[in-house]
Image 1 (spheres, one colour):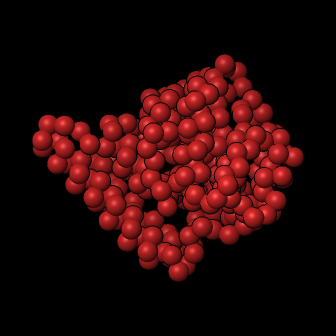
Image 2 (cartoon, one colour):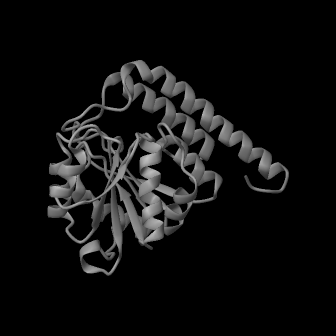
Image 3 (cartoon, helix red, strand yellow):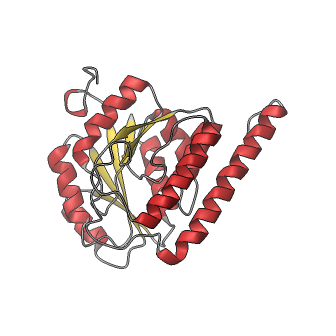
Length: 250
């Protein structure tokens, strides 16, 4: 990396968005780690209708909290964060999961990468160097299939399309504040960026196993998830191709 400005020695305004649903077991430690590693950012927890003490613990740890009155799912929770970032004129917004998998100390590296590459979004990928927690065998197989599909559709190498560790610039914030996929949106969000002619890049990060709570993608949902996402991205690609053929963009 070149000697780019980092968050602690610049005037950049950065929001950390932490979507959380029943993450009381680990959310406090996540916020304390963010405060320790990158104390110059603002932290916003989107409490997605949790039935436990997620909201109270997040506030006690020093985060701002938006309490959603019902569970919108990960897409609605994340978009709430991007809307907040757009309305409050943040330069950058970064998603960090509330389960402790992401290392906040990598955030400056994500910023360096977005400044160096000029990308609209930089993704932390666990599969470039293959260090740290690599997910279960079944999920790795599914992720590999989605990676191959997105690489083919976008013409860009994609190694970790389901990673929730994402650093966005103003153009991506503006787009996601207006339009963001629901259900399991990480893969579809990449196609959305591609369709709107925004760019993304990946850098290697080391992730840990979740420190608490339960994954939103259960074994029973895995087949549904894969089928839905594959059909969705193929439809998005088809709609974009038709738009180009007719001389307008979707």
